Image (cartoon, rainbow, N blue to C red; front, top):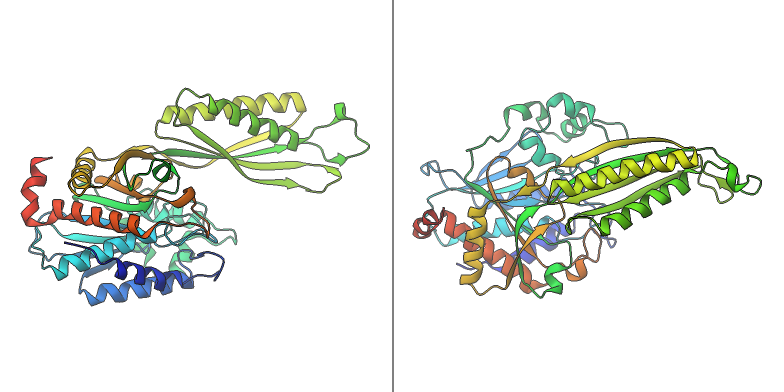
Length: 422
C-alpha cells in the first residue's frame, strides 16, 4: 500500500491558510477561530470516510476506522494541529495529516483489519494559551482534575475551564473520559525532528527510543533600584548582574555535566524598570532543564539553587524560585520500536535510533499504552518559526513508514508476524 503524497500536501496547504498571522508564520492556538477552521476542515474529511467520531470535553478528536466487529484494541496514530505564535507549518500538523492519509489508504485498499485504527488529534499541545504544554494529552490521561482546570488561567485571567467551555466543548465531562491502561493497543506519532541531528547525519528517518523530561523554573531576583551614575559599584544590589551570573554558570557547568544528554536554557527575561540609566529593581527569568535521564535534570536543579543562593548572598538580593512546569522522561515501547526498525530496514530507509529533546503528546500516552515515534528531518534544525521546513521526500518516507507500521500492527496478513515479535 502506498500513500498519495499530493493529498497530504493539499491538506497541509488548506490548513496552513488558517492562521492569525498570514505571511508571518502559522499562529493557530487551540480554541481560537483559526483552530475552529482547521477542525471544521478535518471533520469534513473524516465525515467523507464515515469514521466513528468522538470529540471529548477538552476537544481531543478521535476518529476510528474499523467496526464494532473488531474486538481487539485500537491503534492510535496522530499528533496536534495547534502552533506557537508565528510558528512553522509542519510541527504537529504533518503527523495528523499522515494519519488521515493512512486511513484513506486503508479504506481504498479495503484492508482487512484485525484491529481498529484511529486518528487522534490532541488539543493545546504547544501550551500557547496557558503556558502548559501537552495539556490535551494530560487531560486525556487524567493528569488534571476539573477543579485544577478551573484554577489554571491565561494571561487575561480566564481559566482553562471557561476558555474550553466558551469554545463549545463539554468540559464538565472530562473526568469521565480519561483514557485508561489496556484501552488501546498502541500509539505511533509522526513528527518533525525540530533539531538538526538527522540532517547532519544524512538520515531520512529517526526512530525515537526516549523522550526527554523537563523542569521549568521561574527565578525572581529583587535588589534595589537606584541611579546608574551616582551609585558606587560596591554599594549596589543589582538583580540583573545576579541573573547574568546564574545564567552564565549554568551554561558552563551543563556543558561539562556527567551526562552528555543534559541541556539547560535561559529564556523569557524581564527587567524592571528596564531603563538604560537605572539599576534594576527586579529581574525575572526562566530556566528550562531537560534530559532523557532524570538525574541530568536533578543536576541542573541542584546547580541552579546553589548558584542563586550564592549570588544573592554576595549581591544582597532576595530570591524566589518556582517550579512552573515539569514532565518525566519516558522510554518508549521496545515492541513498537522493533516494528519500526524492521519496516525501515525492509523498505530501505536510512534511519537512526535517537532521543527526543522536545516533549510530545507521545510521552503522556506512554503512561497508558505502548508508544512509538517517528521523526523526519528538519532542515537546519529550524522549528517554531516561519523558516521551519522538511523536504517532500522525507515527508513521504515518514508517512510511508507509519503506514507500514500500521500494516504490521493491524492488517490481517501481517498480524501473525507482529505477534511473533512481541
